[in-house]
Image 1 (spheres, rainbow, N blue to C red):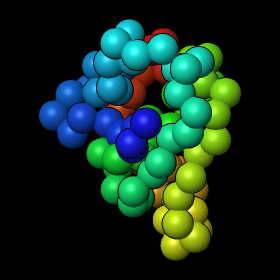
Image 2 (cartoon, one colour; image 1 turned 60 degrees about the vertical axis):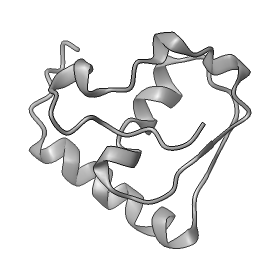
Image 3 (cartoon, helix red, strand yellow; image 1 turned 90 degrees about the horizontal axis):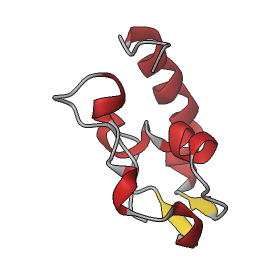
Amino acid sequence: MLDCGLHPARDGIQALPYFDMINPEEIDLLLLTHFHVDHCVGIPYFLQYTGFKGKVYMTHPTMSIYNYIAQDFVKVATISTDE
């Protein structure tokens, strides 16, 4: 799978990719191309709430900044905790 970000024009759970069209258990790896929100912020949801058991790959620079990007997004996002 290539990237797992959020749609910038949508809110809440609707901003996530449509995971119903795939079987996460059949995916061997997730390749993160870079750390922009529309490419990476859906990864925590994908890892926690789907059956994905593969590995996630990204470059060292992306890995070094990913946590900051994700934490910053959570601070400023308006995603409901109910979702």
